[in-house]
Image (cartoon, rainbow, N blue to C red; front, top):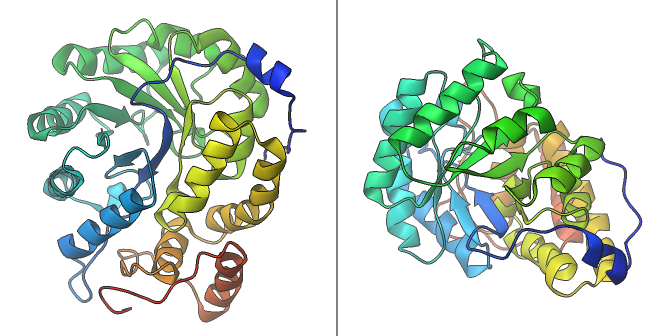
Amino acid sequence: MWLEPAAPTEELLSQRRRPPMSEFHGIFSPVCTPFSPGDQSIDEDRLRRLIDFQLDNGVHGIIPCGGTGEFPTLSFDERKRVTEVCVDQVNGRVPVMAHTGACSTREVIELSKHAESIGCGSLMIVPPYYEVPTDDQLVAHYAAVSDAIPLPIMVYSIPAHSKINLTPELLHRLAEIPNVTMLKDSTSDLTQFQRIVSELSDKLTIFNGSDVGALAGLIHGAGGCVWGVANATPKACVNLYELVIERKDFAGALNLWQDLYALNYFFETEGYAATAKAATRMAGVDIGVPRDPFTPLTSEQESRLEKLMEALGALAEPVGATAD
C-alpha cells in the first residue's frame, strides 16, 4: 500500500527527472468492455458512447482490452474487434494503445500486427502469466515482439497477476530493446518506483498503474497514469494530473485526492470490473455488468459506491442504454 507523501516544494519537484512531454503522457483510460444483456456479446454502441464520454472529459489516451476491459474473458477475435471499434471511434483524437499481452509470443505478435494494421500507434504488453518465464525468456519475448512490430511498447508490471516483478535490474535489460519505450508500474511499491524513476526515466516514459498510488506516482516522477477509475471519473483524474504536473498546485491536488483516494480504494477492494461498470453507470454511461463468472455489485456495495461518487460530484442521470 502506498503511503501518502508530503507535497513537495517546486524546487524539489524540479530536481526530479521527468521524461520530455510527448504524446505519451497524462491520463490513459483502459476502457471497460461493455457486454449486451443476455448473450453477453460485445455491445459496440455502448463502447462508442463510453469512448466519447472519456474524450469529452479530457483523457489523453485510450487503451482497449486491458485488465479493466476484462481481456481474460474475451476471445481472440473479440479482442481484435474491440480494438477496431476503439480506433474507429477515437478517430485520431488521442492515441490508442492496444493491450496485446497473452501467454504465448506468437499470440502477442498476431494481436500486435493486427493492432498496427488498423491504426494503433503503440502497444501495452503484460508479461506471459500462469506459466512464469525466466528473466532471459521474458527479455526474449519482448525482443521478438519488438522485432516483429515497429511500434512503441509499454511493458506492464503487475506482479499481483503476472507473478513477475519488473525490477530495476530487469527493466534495464528490457529498456535496451529498441521499441520498449514505456513502463506501466502497478506494483504499489513506492520505494522501487522511485528507484525506477531515478535510474530509468531517461530511457522509459513511466506511467503509474496503481490506482491508490496515483497522487504519489505523479509527485514522484510519473509522466502519467494508466487509470481504470477514469472510466467513471475522467474529469477528476485529468484534474489531478493537471494540478500536479501542469499547475504545481499540490495543496489543490491533495484536497481532490481525499475523495479520489476513497473511490480508488473501493475499486481495488470490492471487485474491480464490477465497480468500474457500476461507477460508470452512476456517472451517466450505462455499460452493463461484468461477463460471467463475475457478478455485479450487491445493492449494499452500490449504496456505498454511490456516496463516494457523490462526494466527487461525479453522479449523473443515466444516459444511453438502460441498466441491466
